Image (cartoon, one colour):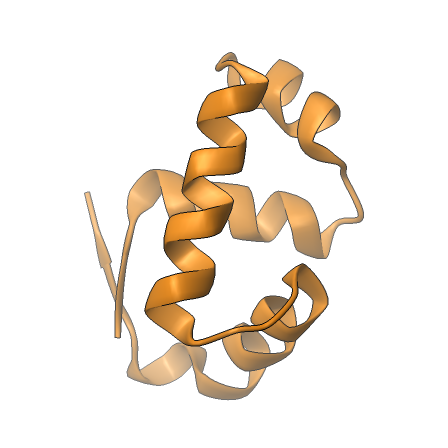
Length: 68
């Protein structure tokens, strides 16, 4: 499994309970961009929901590569 650095950042924000608007403000990107990152990471992870993605992340993270 491989997530981009930005997908990883967005996933950690979701794990912290932030919504798209808050993530966009925190990372200095648009809400549409945040939504695209979320869709991409969910597809890569075969996650059905954001909560499912966070669950997979914490269960599987040591096996993942985060690309800069």
